[in-house]
Image (tube, rainbow, N blue to C red; front, side, top):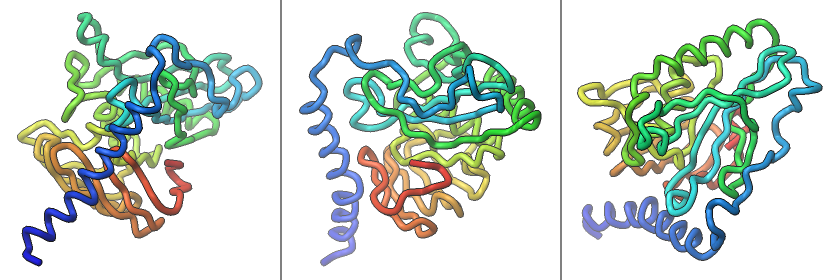
Length: 255
């Protein structure tokens, strides 16, 4: 078998088959109109009315409609000590099309289904005044997000680009995004090097179209045309675009 044949088999196994399978599955399973799909709580966040500690959580759920075959939408949910409501911090693509800011900071259901898709908890930080201060930093960083007036589903900047950006600024979250977070590897040219969102590694990105990631937490990932695949040796698993993680569950990041 030639070198080119081996490369073709790797691309077929790690990139083409997983994405093709997810496209078929999404088109087969989701038959409801988007406005009829669930947006209520998934009962994962501690109730704000009875929980007095400060909370920062990061969630990811399959994107709406056809986008869900390729990736997830991610967001932050925050609650300071003794607050009776959660604040959601996220990037919304259609807001830019309407001439509004991409970043939305507003009250909302922290762990809501995203157009019928159950959210996965990616990070969970709780505590007292130190978490209150971290929430202030998170909100300030969101207000000053450099792509607040732009949005592109592929290769970015999108909602996952925002979440990765915030993770780099707030390493206390120890946030590492799954391969299904399409856009997480986007870096604006000429910038090509950055820390991973968890702060435990480095990544190389060519405008989000190609790149490499090496992290003590996430392992090794290869980005081809915005799609990431890789291997995690720390908590053994194979990671695919579209399909996600297959192997042992990463308890730290919960994806």
